[in-house]
Length: 137
Image (cartoon, rainbow, N blue to C red; front, side, top):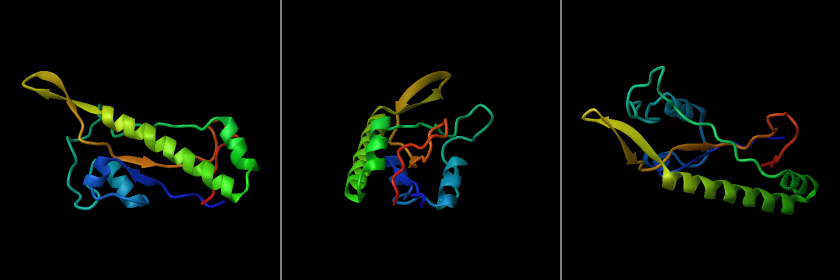
């Protein structure tokens, strides 16, 4: 089974010129806090107390996995599209609610984020390693 490449999501990704399939070098640069094209620093310097990213898993219910497993190619395509639409919807909500904290004149303030940079990847097994929703493309 071929592993589908990850894809970029978010207004922040677009601001960095990231669109479509994720390339390893660009992903590693972003996770290192560097602009994937210019190599310039993104935000503040990273240290032991900073957070470079968050890992979120959006799992389809087992019934969706079973539907995918027993379906023909057309049904598998429709299930995959529905799952992608659901993931995009929750990420759009996260992006609309995203904010960051910073210090200004000694006070911590919350500022709305201008967007998020998200790498979206499909997982092929659950954390318990049983087969899960596994679209082939």
